[in-house]
Length: 594
View 1: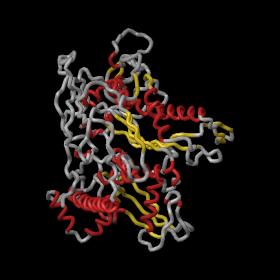
View 2: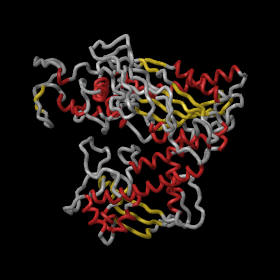
View 3: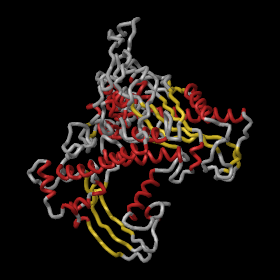
View 4: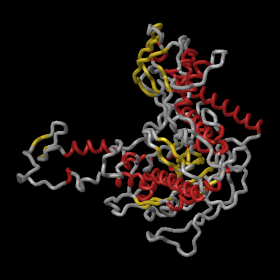
């Protein structure tokens, strides 16, 4: 069986998931020959055991340093080891990247953790009370508005059994009889019935008619739009409670003050997904909770009179009403309008395992999209800066190149209308100028107090840094997130009271691995692994430093990734067999509105 991951560098942006040989032994073989040479070594099985923690990682992190085994009660050093005596003189650890196109193995672990986090908020478990299964809950999809006509595949009636392999006859893309050309003399109609894998899906019919500036600004402010939508829905439910005669709840704040709050509140788990046109839309699991006056942090059911229909009405009303204009920009002083699109899909969630939308289906669906990014648009790159922006941005290029160009152009510094290096020079003595001097860093001769060339270089570096909270330009983040087409939010978020945290799941996994070789039951994780020690426990204290990224050779990557691919295949087969025996639907097969 061959490795399912790339073993040689690709001609794409750095850091997107390809293995490359690092500085190390040169064997003069191909990848297969290098793997054979490694497999014939006497310490081969010891090497496999050494790299097991990062065997499936595409670009593992190598650490070097010293490990000390310490007795906690006395602080006495029981054992001392150095990575120089280990295979490859390094410790391998997984990169932990969530993107499936960067590292499939780490993304699989992240996806499974996300599934547990999302599902626990619907059915309970892992510290979440099981009473949450009695709360009203819906699966909502919020889409972006239209920024121009794009090629689409619309199916009014599905007759297929599996949407992933949908072969239903679609409607014509843009069938219009009243117009044939746009204002740029390009066809404004499309009679084609596109197939699911058609490369033109999501591309504008006319690139000049499409509003690329508005789309990247919408991506930038989409997180604020969701925040306001949730607040509007909670206000709608608070008004409904007041009309039904349900009083507000008195809770004591952390400062000891008494505060009256509505009797219901929303908790959510949300995943962002990129559409083929480069706009994000949100899938959210929204749960209706009550408020406990004695313990405001507790998760309790809402009053009995609140139903799923009330929750659905609140979200629909909020999606229709919430809209705002972004701050002014030199290119658009009135700002851009930000609102949801017309396509809003809200479905109740069935917790019985039978129904159109079940808890396992939606949790698997959101967890799957939490490992994706801009791949659907055809763009993959790391964070862009002044040196690499020219490789991706083009105001006259394709759809994605114009979106990236819009991010870089709108996110430019707006405090100084004309850059210092482009201002006209007047050699007459006047305030602000000095005698002609030569910059010791770059050698530029200038009469400005500060070298304009070095200032431009420093500004280019700042363009890729996080925007300061004190900045007066709200669009400065567009340059930092130009590689994400303007979207700078997290792909998976949740409310604090919705479910457990990823850290708790990681700590539980560490505790399990510590005790998996023991016959007795191990305790559940109740804190960080360092805090879960007793008198018979020894601590391993490491002083490790970064030594590199990636496998030493493509042969090592071939062996490690193939072993991990076989393990993943066995786990997938076992899950499918178990689902077949239980007659359940595999997770992640929810049809969506977009």
